[in-house]
Image 1 (tube, one colour):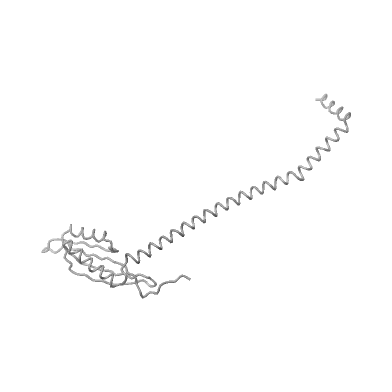
Image 2 (spheres, one colour):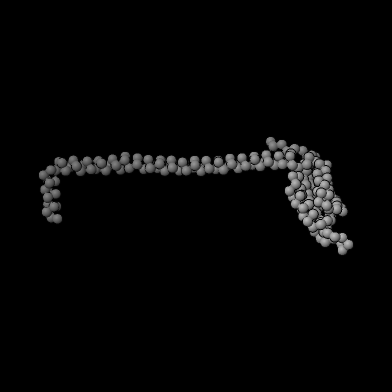
Length: 199
């Protein structure tokens, strides 16, 4: 170690000008690195981080836009489907709803050998609704298998009929068969309500 240190001192003493130039060069290099290169490196690094954050933000915005677009498309399809349902499936008015339920249900009861003993109806409508509801209650009697087929025919009918309540009981001892108390509803377009116009 002493020999190495002595050798370095001797080289510096003999080559003082070269050693001084090397020391000045190292100081200038360190100064340039500290004052120019490192700040530029940090600036470029920060710009890269900002670009990556902007790219991630752009991708997140694209995903949100796509989600919103799909939701808007879904709502448009749902509105179109609802409009088609209102125009093509639901009766146009109360008279159409009564014709649909009374004629169709009487025909189905007759077709399935059921005796219609009583039938009643009532209408109602929620405030600000475009639809009215016709609720029909029926008392039918007949064989159990015919009642099951009648209910199946209602459930699979192309008309929009909603079975709300079914009460099945045994007939009197003098009667052979079952008694069906059925409550169902259909909806119809209510024309008293003005069309809503979006601003």
